[in-house]
Amino acid sequence: MNDILDILIPVLPAVVVGLLAYYFFDGFLKNEENRRRFILHKEAQTEALPIRLQAYERLTLFLERISPLQLLIRVKPNGEDKKAYVDLLAATIEQEFEHNLTQQVYVSNECWAAIKSAKNTLIQQLRKTLADTQLQSAQDIREYILTNFDESQNPTSLALDYLKAEVQELFG
Image 1: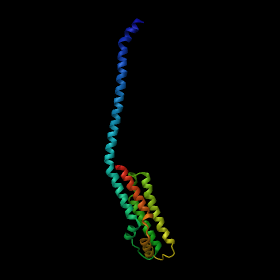
Image 2: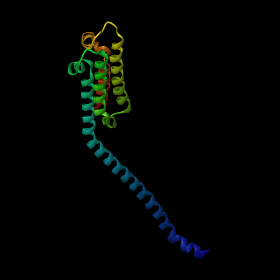
Image 3: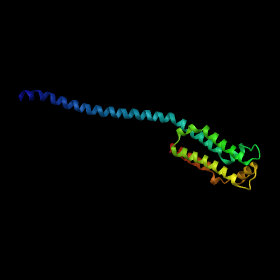
Image 4: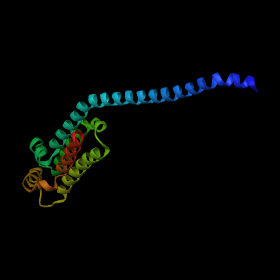
């Protein structure tokens, strides 16, 4: 028994010191790893912010380009067929949308859903004008939309407001 005590007395403090050292070094290494992750995350955000802002700018331009007044000013009817004109407008909107499709990677799912909803709602509104029997030609549809357009019911304005709010959250 004395032999065991003679061995334990010098070894026990070394074991305790070893366990304490392991505990402190483990905590230090975990803290250091978390700090490195934070720095990498912060650097990634700093590099990604200009790209995200550029995506918001492109989506803003997309919404402005497909707003009914801007769209009708840019896309004039080729003939008198009102269905062909509405199809041309819808195709133009779809083309603009496809051109900006990759921007969804940089915005929230909710923001992208608002943009898609604005596009789809606008196309539906344009197609509804075809049902109006008083509008006989493409020029009639164009003039009707230009004169009776209500800014408060503009789906692109609503999506643009959502987009602006999301950009403000980046800086808020």
